[in-house]
Each structure stands twice: as structure tokens, then as C-alpha cells.
Image 1 (cartoon, protein in one colour):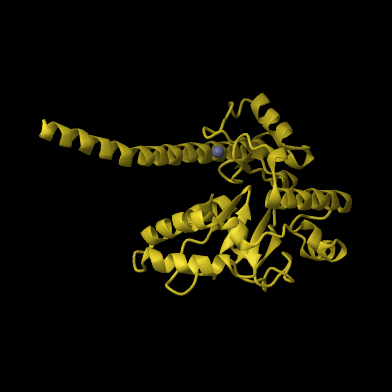
Image 2: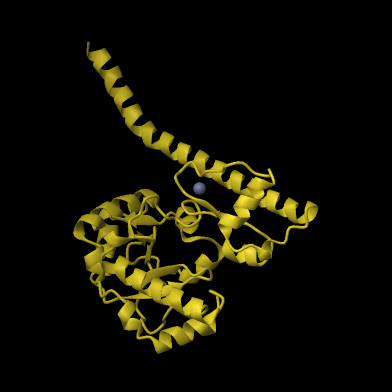
Length: 287
Ligand SMILES: [Zn+2]
């Protein structure tokens, strides 16, 4: 009987350990399918330009491109298995060399996100996003145009787009507890207590939230010591340990006994999407 109980207990532990792993593997597989589908679509679009002389620059938007590819029988209905939407990227249509993105896997949008539920940082970011979108549309400037952004932030009072949240508002005691645990798992060289005290120091420091505009127009917010460095300077903005993207704050994964590793620049996002980068570098969602 005791042996049977032990076996049952071991199985229970195994199930508990393996369920998250299976879920992780499943999501990895779904991502792979999504990437593969988008590659197929990209090739189909390229083929259409070669064999049928299709000029994609004359197509108005993603829907028109996808409709044409279907009409030509080059693609079937592709759907992201994780609930994202696959779309032809705007700039690639303009360039005539169509590539596809996924709202979930590339842009990190959670399916079914409701904008009107945004509060705090989320609503400040939404306000900035809307104002920038309007400015872009009326100026016809490219979203990666740095001079335009510098002028925008000079003209508009940047303070309007800032949510005055203290770090401790976002990084609560409860979250510090959880974060210290997962950071300790990533780097067992320091004790949980050591990491916790570093996080507490960080939470109590005087930092401001600054927006940073990526080349595709996506905005991230980050905690910085130097709020005058608004997100327009590609070389000389300060580093950060916490970033807000698509409704969630993310924390840099590493700390030593004395400090958080704050050598992270938002500009690193220029080479990949925030969600890809968070995954690659192991950033931790704060919630
Ligand atoms: Zn996807």
C-alpha cells in the first residue's frame, strides 16, 4: 500500500512537471507552423511577381494582397494556430517584396485583447500611439523617420504621454517575491534574499517612464534615470531593466548581489520584435 502511494505520488509529480513542458512544446510547434506558413506565403508572393508580373506596390493593403494570392490559387487559408492573425506587412507591400507577420508570434498581441480595459500605463501608451498615428498619417512620413519623431516630441508635451507610475507601483512586494524566485533559478550563484534586496532597491529608486518608438511604429515604455532622453535618439538613450510592451511589464532576467544588470538598450529591438527578444533573453513578465 505504501509502495502504491509512493508510485501515485511520483506519477503526480511527473504530471505536474510535464504538463507545463508539454504546453511549452505545443506552443513551440504552433510557432514553427506559423513561421512555415508565412514563409510559404512569402514565396507565393515572390513567385507571383516573377511568373505573373504582379506589382504588389499597386496593392492597397494586406487584405488585397492575400485575396489576390488566393484568387491565383497560390495559397490556401493559413491561420495561426495560437490565435494570431497573419498579415502582409505594410512596408513590404510598398516595397513590392511582400513579407508576412503574425499579430501573436511577431507582434506579441494576445488574441482578444480589449483596448478599452486599459488603465494606467496602458492608457497613456494608447494615447501616445493614437497621437503619433495621426501625425504620421498627416505628414506621410516613414515610421522610422527619426527627425520626425524628434520634432513630434518637441512640439507635443511629452509629459502628456507619461504615466507617472513609481517603480514600486508596478513592482509590488508580492511580485518582487516571485521575481526573486525565478531570477534565482536562472542564476543560482546568488541567494534569493540577495536578489530580493536588489529588486527592492530598484523598486524604491526614482525613475521615470519614457516612451521609445521602434522603426515599425511600435511603442515600448521603459523605466529610465534620464527622462529627457525621449525615445528618438537611437544611439544615446539610457539603459533599462524594465520595459512595458503590449499590456505587460517585463523585467530583465539578471541581477547580481548588488544590482540589476541594466545594460539593456531599447534599441536592441531594432533587430527583432519585442516578443522575440523577450523570449530569447528570458525576460520575465511582471504580473
Ligand atoms: Zn502566429
